[in-house]
Length: 124
Image 1 (cartoon, rainbow, N blue to C red):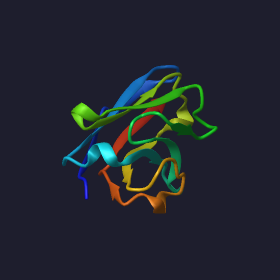
Image 2: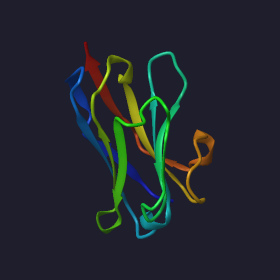
Image 3: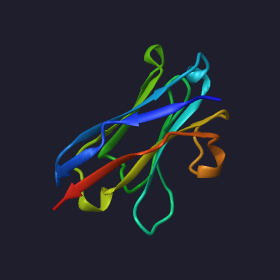
Image 4: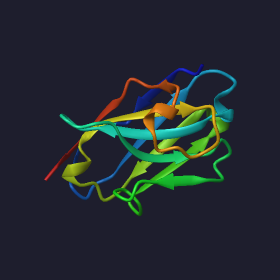
């Protein structure tokens, strides 16, 4: 099991950028596939991006492809989500999650461990 803590959310204007961080605990962080999901009010949890244990494979939802970049630094036990050209429809709570299996599932049920989430609000 790995404990995850997200940070970096906030309020930004449309067209702006934010960088989310997901700090993991434990020596096994580097063995996990890491994913980012989001949930807007009244909607289900939506897959955003995933990255393999060594960063060699990434996968993105079409809605964020070309605007968001997922990365990780295993020496720091941290995964990141760089979000550029943000839109009001990106407003949601963003969660990071860890999956013990190979990359890259877009089903939230595949991920065993979750952070508490961080709010991202994009104003028009």
